[in-house]
Image (tube, rainbow, N blue to C red; front, side):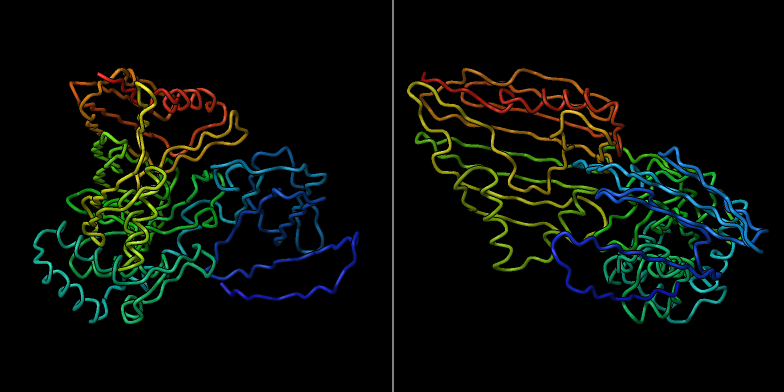
Length: 510
């Protein structure tokens, strides 16, 4: 918990000079430390050698787990200590892949801890957390604030009270993103966080739990790992977790919350899905597995209406209905924009639909709510979008103007060595209507398509009736990550969906 920075200056060196940098980090064991750690045994830029040593008293034997490597820890003894040394030499030149998981999930690493089980690893931290964050006698300012928030929201049920408290902590207390454990696990007292108006994971979770306790709502912190880095259950150390979220007990069920996020949605915390998590309790706790969220928790629904003029100009009206992770992204990107900056944003976005696109109108719904959809309407005009080519026209379906409404998997590589990161499960829905000008008829629309692969399903269908074309498409992502050995079928399925003939409507003269 005692973090310091040291700046080292290097003298000027000539061409061809080899600079060797040797550094040692010594961690001091305190009641608020992780009592263990994680070290990578490789890196993307090549190094000649990497050595990790772990030294403990003779009576303490660390629990070690070496992952994705054949290296072994060599034990040596000297005096009253023994040292475990892991040497990685002649490391190959490695390169990252697009949209891969965090380094700790793909590179060789060692995870080490000094406690015999998870209860012993958690107990010191849990006692200190609850003593400070949720004491038996809550500070008067916390009780008064909780009652005031509930009264202002006219909340009567636990659900309504929890929403009012979460709204305040997530939106009105500024969040600071500090990796969990970097400065220890002990939070500031809730009345201090309330007075400061800011806090990190520990502080905002503690404040939320204290406010909830004032309203007789139970809850607890939960330690999770982000980036879909697997938690190794054989090594009890809090260093495996890098984020703290919270659960509140509402109607006999746990409601997962991410109060640190200033754009977070009520009942949705994405970190720790499909992974082991560690609830924090005074008398210790055991690891539990958090299931995946359903794709229906984050939905991007786009309704697009296109009207093609006789001269080839296209008027496009986009209506966005965004929930879950899409709503958070919209809030994060759009809430800070006001006046001219917001106007410029939508003018730039108009160009995403087609070259020369002009912003005609845009409206925003509520952006600071904790639930419900974020609604955005955007009307654009694209000049000379589908001009005559003799007796036919090719109308390529425009892309949505708002990139934040799209979170499709990256499939630019033909093969992969590392897993593909897909993000939280999500659903894309699109309804398209095209009005064809008089004197033209529809000669071709994309055929019906249904398909998918491990982690993804989709279906699309278009039909033409008179001068109007309608299309409906759905795509659901059901996993956080995709193993490398399942990538090729996934790539083929996405390539089939993204083929050019799936994106065009052909018109001919009547």
